[in-house]
Image (cartoon, rainbow, N blue to C red; front, top):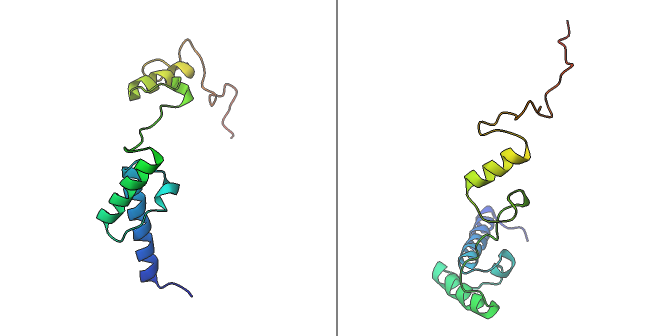
Length: 112
């Protein structure tokens, strides 16, 4: 049986409510699919119960930054400085010591 647009919308909203409640309780998206309830309060209560059963009771925090900043949590400025060092750029984003960008061609001539 094919779903009506209203049924599809209701299913999508219910799935979103489950996901929001689960993530707020520290569950993964996969674990959130198992939440039961028809209201936001019921889903949140079920999410807290399931989180306790899985040993998580708070929302998970990001594990850190990418490898270009050595996997440590830092500021945006620290990430920008690491990017500039990696690519040979000064604080203004210009090449240091005459280094060229990989897109800079020395032998290009305009066609006539």
